[in-house]
Image 1 (tube, rainbow, N blue to C red):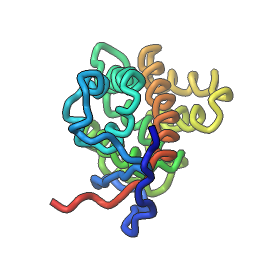
Image 2: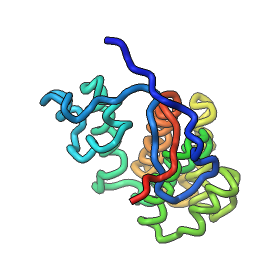
Image 3: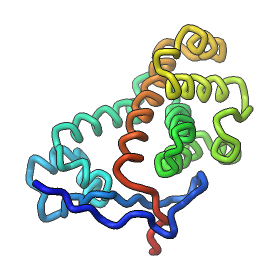
Image 4: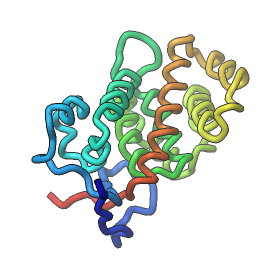
Length: 202
């Protein structure tokens, strides 16, 4: 099956990190809603994701999309134990900021703000970058996320000890690692498939 290449280089492409809602446009044609089979719907996991051009593009391989989505949901939505949701989102936002993924950073920065009520601190991460000095705990989560993002094999005992020193137990440390590792991969996928756009006017 040949893929149709679609327009790129939107004139209104966002160029700064923001907590505002923005859009994303693929460089390949996503599936249309009327092309979805039961297999595709199962891969989407959430029917509402059919409204997203990103997930409709990934739906071309529904088995991988299903595994990806269930992993994502378990990392960020599983409330059983571990890191508070705000700091799971902080880990993803820091990773996305370091990787230069404006779209992912906007999504996870908004979630970090929603769950922490610390909008100004989250915005400082976006404005100042991953070297920002916020507080010991958030600094440790950001630093661990960036270490894992920059050179995964170099992440190690130093980052773990710093996380322990600010109160994270084994499950919380695992959540910080999972959030950063997942988005280190997800950012690269999104950055290779399309570009951010201005939010659609309502």
